[in-house]
Image 1 (cartoon, one colour):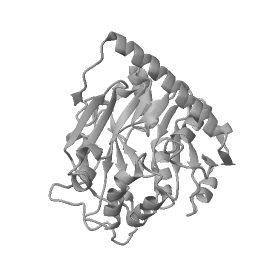
Image 2 (cartoon, helix red, strand yellow):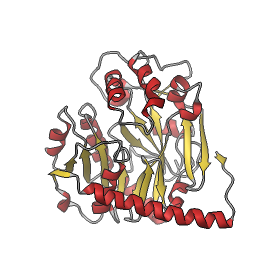
Image 3 (cartoon, rainbow, N blue to C red):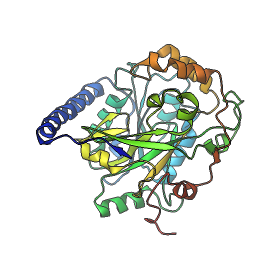
Image 4 (cartoon, rainbow, N blue to C red):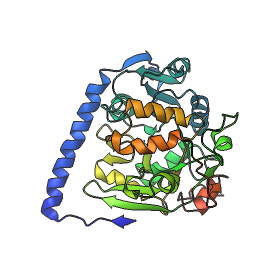
Length: 346
């Protein structure tokens, strides 16, 4: 991890003041964004005080939703709160029929909502305070040490006992061995996308928020080798005991207040952490990338990433001789991609 030089006392005081105002501004944005959400099925009255809640914003994710819900139900998420951004593939209708899902819809701009963060922030403000909240995308499946034997209730009880407010995770891109335009097959995400890059990954600490910036992996290797500073950010803070004073700043990559960013230092951090198995490269990625080229909703500077989307539409092969076949959480712990394997026993 590469730290940046900390500022002196006067500058720290000024930065702290500015960050407090930024946090308040983000909370106010979330309050306003919530007024534009239309409930399709609001079952939030069924939420109990100690429920673990799942939050997501999505568009056209029917391909992933059955496995997504099954995975997090098995881990112990009691209720899902979802914003659907004008899906056309049946996602909203499917979620509306699920008894443990509350769903809201909006056709507003994903980009103008801070890439869905304002919408998710509205639901976190309304329903998340005091709960352990899992904030993930539909293409992310969380694994952590002993997740096969100890669910999120056991994990969060351990974090509570240690006085720890959350857990970080590495977003790990999974991919097939062949080209990305191969036909879709039956099977889980792991069966369709069994390979990943074990490294290298690098982490920087950025001031004044103290947010971490982890880059590397297959997308850095294939798409950003000539401009590594443009490679995607891979660290996330998906599991937090939520307080209404908190705010996500850049996806779930960073948070305010700044102390929350100290929860996770990226790969190699010995503290308890997880991995988000990222299924971006399921069959159909070429068509989705072509759509995003036209919609221009997924980056603050879409033109800077147009080449990346065009490269995806060409269906490259991501596999290399350095690729590793995914096995389980133990493998990821041995590779240093998650920490804290001793928390749950053997």
